[in-house]
Image (cartoon, rainbow, N blue to C red; front, top):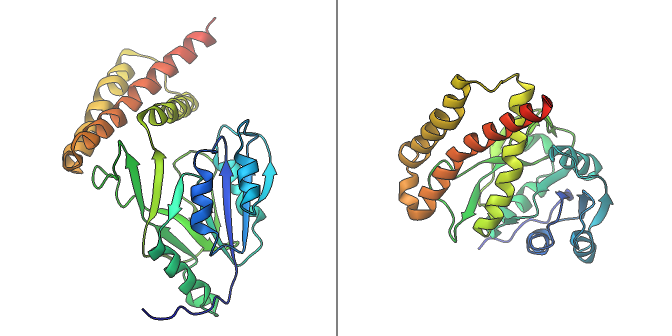
Length: 267
């Protein structure tokens, strides 16, 4: 194996967290040997997230837990002081291949010879396995970038970074343990369906027979068919079936929450 070049530039690794005591130590352990600084912006977690982060040498900033979580992510990004920034979630782990590629980029003296940002390919853990189909792999996200050249729109929970310049892809994988148990998946689904209901309300969607058919029947069915058959989620076995099914159910639940919001607003 070729000897790795000595890094020329330093790396800031940044997080936004809320109640991540079960995850953050594993994530921090995966990046400690490449990070020159670790910044954690925490939304006033009542658990021990901040204490664990401090034990791993992170600089912790306590703030409020925003409805759009990317606001806190951007806050963490703004605190970075080194030329390269890696934005992580507390339930993500950088594998060895990706770390080697990051070190190669940090060893490139001329920043103009590197891309402004990089896609990271994710493997998503669901029902005791990494999904390989169903639109869940490689699930690319922009997370590694030159400081000052990327930002989050801060409008939705699933948005990508906006980058000023070329974007390439890192080798290796980001291992995403977002749903270690099905209970965790349902808990997060409750949050995401509430956000979708709020977005529908802001778009002026009103409860009606037509919208009920669209969001409670057509979108769930179409989503399931797309993920399970077109994107071959069927090859992921039971996990692929459940993921496709509940991805469709997302729209049904969001519409019910929209209906409930409108009913409460009329009282």
